[in-house]
Length: 352
Image (cartoon, rainbow, N blue to C red; front, side, top):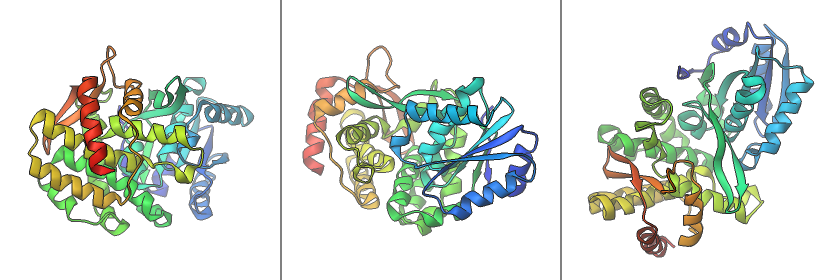
């Protein structure tokens, strides 16, 4: 059963953890203390609580950090009636969710996302995962599970502490949802700014879009693959960034990479599927303006090597998601390397 996404309430959290044998909270160490204390205060009313703080960011998504979580579970004698609460952005919910899904074959799991990206995407749908370094460098989310949580609680007041670039990172995922749906929602979303005031008005609707798609295709056998729009190239760019620097502040954020993946997907959709060129150009400009950041594109060889390791591929074929028009999705497009190379180099020159 797909997890229910709900507006966060202390009463609902107290109900969910009330019958547990204990609670472990993994919280992003950069969160305001009041956020963490507020969640702890609810849980201690009914059960014992243990806290572990880890700095969020893509570097947290490693098997070493999963093992660190296992050791912490051991130290507090966690059992299968223990509930893990993940309080943080998408990297915390991804890694924490994976640890919960695999320790003793599954702990209870509560996801409390504190970023826009987490609220509209990462915490919804039961995907957990960590990255893995292999012969082609770091590959995003190569190890993971489908594991539903007991609760996903959205509290938009937690967004107040986010820097503008984190808001824009989440905006990119919301732009993806708008492109997938098209119609009135896309037109409305295009007219809001990519700051918190603009984004905040659409978080609930964007979360509902993803939740609806997941309910129709929980294990990604068909329609759910459409949610990978912008992510084949986006994950490649993000992985290249992980390879090239250990300075987290210098790395491409997930949403920034996805935004440029969307821009490329629109470019490819014009060439391969006949997407209207003028509409694509308008949408590309909207995304480039909204994300407010250029990224290192990488060579076609580098990007292709990353795409070859993508978890969506079948029988060695590089799969992608393209659009025939806003709201008209092809989720099983397969790339020919030569065609991709030509298009990528043209794209890179255009947006360098």
